[in-house]
Length: 439
Image (spheres, helix red, strand yellow):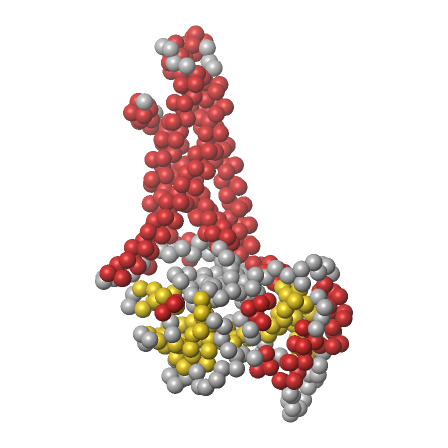
C-alpha cells in the first residue's frame, strides 16, 4: 500500500510540491520552537539544589551619613543582627553569606589546583556559615561538614560538582568530584584547602548550568554586613503577611548605626524578577506566540490544500469506492499520504535546522535559541577515557536531536491529521455515480 501511495504522490508531484515546500519551512521553524521549549522545560524540571520555599532575603544598607573615619565594630554588629533575627518566633533558620545566594545576586569565581593530580580548574567561590545549609536545605551527599573554626593551616571546605558530576576536565575527561582531596589557591600555592564533604550540584537560576563550586564555611561573625547577604527560612504554617509584620516589628531592632534594615523579600519574588531581568520570560512568550501562530497557520494551510486536492480527486475516489474500497480505507489512504509527504519534508528540514544551529546564524540575529552543545564543539580526542567521554557527549547530543525531532514531527503530524480529517471524510462519503458524472 505504501508503494502505491508513493506512486500517487509522485504522479501528483506538481500539486504536492507547494505542500512539500510549506512543510519544510514550517517544520524548520517549529523545530527551533520545540527545541527551545524542550530545553527550557528540561532546565525547569532539573533540581536547582537550593530549596527557596519559605525563604527570604533581608536587605541591609549602609547609611551614607556615616563618617569614613568612624570606627565600626563589624563583628559585634553582625552577631547582634543575626541573634535578633534568630530569636524571632517565626524564624526557623537564619544565615549570612557572601557570593552564595541564588539568582545572580552576587558571584565570585576563582582558580585552583586540584590535588592529588595537580591540574588547574575554575570553580565558583561561595562563602557561607553552616546555617546556610539549613536555610536552603542542602544535604551532604558524602563526607562530613567543614569546621568553620578549622585548626591548623589547612582550611576545610565543601565542594559541589558540575553537570558532569565532576570538578573540571582533566586530560580531556571529567575529573570525578569524589577524587578531590585538596584544592590549592591559584595565586597562593601555600594555601591548602581540605575537602571534607560533597554537596549536591547547584545552579543560580533554572536556565543556568551546574557549575563546580567551592563552599568556604566561616563563623557568622567573620562576615561584614556591608558586603554580605542575610537569608532566613520561616517556620511551616507562618501566615503570608510575614514580610510586612517582620519589617514593622524588626525595623528598629535591626537598624544599628551605620546599617539600616530596609526590606525583606521572598526568594520566590526574586526568582520571578530574575526571569524578567535576563529576558527569559520575554523569550518564552515570544516562542509561545510563534508556536501558536504556526499551529494556526499549519491547520489553515493544510485544510485548504487538502480541501482543494480532495475536490480535484473526487472522480478517483468515486472510482475506488466503485471498485470496492470502503470509506475508511479511503480516509486512511489520505492520512498516510499526508504523513509520507510530511516525513520526506522533515528529513530535509532537519538538515537545514542542524546546519543553522551549527553556524549560530539565529543567535547572530538575536533569535532566542537553546544552549545545547553543538556537534561542532565536541572535541575529537584519543585515548580510552577521552573516547568514552566523547562518545557520551555524542550520545547525549543524538538523544536530544531525536527527541526534538519526534516532538516536532508528532505535533505537526497531529495538526495535519486533524486538518485532513474533514476533507477526507467528505471525500470518502461521496456517491460513486455522482463523482463519475461530474468527471
